[in-house]
Amino acid sequence: MAENRASVYGEDVREGVPCWVDAQLPDVAAGQRFYGELFGWTFEEARGESVWARLGGEFVAGLEHKTDGRMPTVWTVYFATPDAEGFTARIGRAGGQVVTAPTVVGGLGTAALAADPEGAVFGVWQPAAHRGFGRRHEPGTFGWVELYARDTEAANAFYGALFHEALFGPGADPDFGRAPVSGVFAAEMPPHFLVHFRVTDCEAALGTVRRLGGRVQVPPFDASYGKVAVVTDNQGASFALLQR
Image (cartoon, rainbow, N blue to C red):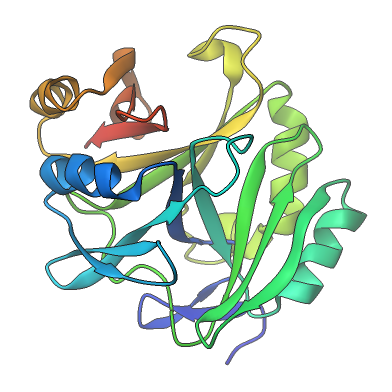
């Protein structure tokens, strides 16, 4: 395996590429009904009460049971690395914080949670048996992640150094952007990552979200990477719909 690369998507990819997403939900069964109808996902048991979502037989996301009511109901993006210990050490040296130290998850891989200097939380994944997304960049799958930051210049410096090859290396085609919080959300909204899922028709998908008990947080707007709407599911987890 090449240095600073991890085996996901069935091939070696640059360290810092989004490779997985999961949602922490109080009711996983309700999440299966919501996302199954919205995106056409099917599900299988993973660990404990958690499930993996598949589309066309390939892994696309995870739904995790939230065991502590104080934890947020949220979608988390994980960035690939071949060395979770080394990666989290670099996060700390760059001014970020390791929220959960690297932990081996069965034979699946090694996971960690971290936060950038402004407090936006993201995951780290060192793959083993579970390599990450089997499909992405198509309807019903991960399409983009946007970091909404208070100081975009500082965010660019932090992630530009941490994810340099994925963002700026030869042939890089990033699906990770940075934008000011106040450009889309109320100024008091804390910095955060927003996971985007591709759809073929944003307006039709919004109708399905409403029918299933979710709500529209930010109506459709044009971004540099496509037409975006921010929604929450029927348990309060925010995500975005992306038509491009």
